[in-house]
Image 1 (cartoon, rainbow, N blue to C red):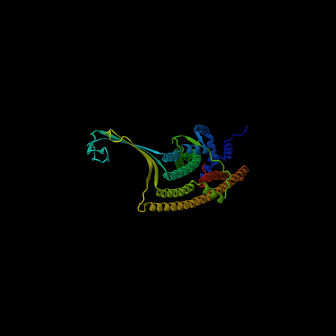
Image 2 (cartoon, one colour; image 1 turned 90 degrees about the horizontal axis):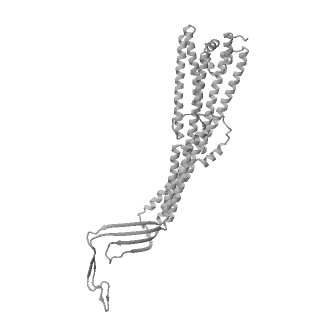
Length: 487
């Protein structure tokens, strides 16, 4: 039977727990404690540790029941349900409605005007003698001066007209082209909004991954600090440790618990913000998937610049606004053309005397033209030309800003990629050092505290690599947005 001497068993546990980050944490911060004594204490409290492990597994099982949200799923939900994106989509739809309304101006217009009134005085029509002519054998018509009067009663006048624009068709077409450009601008604004939302989702998602990782590390630290607190209190009672050591442990425990609370509050706020971006109830519970390892991403700077100049929605919008300004000038210039329309008019007086005609109908051409406007149209046309120059200057400024943005994000991506490479080398070096230290410890060539210190370096290297990995993905998301990539 194997020897179950407590000291030997404690040594064995200490040796086997070298990769455990929690023990590393204890000996790193409290190198004065004896490893074997601590392992004996932990062995005595094995039932308590088993119970804590069971509770932890139960909590993890409850968390597993929550929704696991991948990054692609989050972006898809945001592009579908985000409220700001829906508002931009409605803006595009409004331009379609305006174009449909403008098309009706090409068609004839039908107007009906009805005037109903009560006469307050009779209408008198006087026909002088012979006003209608004098004829042989008949004499003058009328033979004497005659006055006709209408009775005082309600009357009505019905006027109907049909007008078909002719020369205005050119201006109407220009206005339709202007609305077409307005729709294209609205679509580019929608694309820009979608790219902004997708980038915000990525940033929050990566932040949640980092916060969850920090919380797990904090939970391990708190659990070990509490166990260390109980042990140091017993040591103080046994007069093996100083009270100051116990107070130091309590202080570190309180600070670690505060850090954990702060991180949990930050995580809760991040999840609420992400739920809001996804357009759903901010109280929806979910978990996120770990960030994947970086993939190969090769692109030279000139190619990135050309791609951004071709894809960025801000640039497309600026180019469209130059066209809008030019089209607006052409619309203003078309006002110099007279308005020529084909018109059909019909007038029908009602309830007048019989001598008043019952129907009037005319057809003809209607011409409207402001011959002299004191130079108003010329001044407005000059203002439109200056607007074109402003739009062209804005386009050049936007191009410069886009190139600066692409260059900055490209360099940042290069830096994070190199930082990730360094972090990976540091991680590999720390693990190799740990492997060597473990082998030396088996040969009793180094102290256990040296092994634990090396293992602490591994834990720190793992944490630094995780941060470098998240920094790389964040920089990659920013670079993709700088290129104008839709998703």
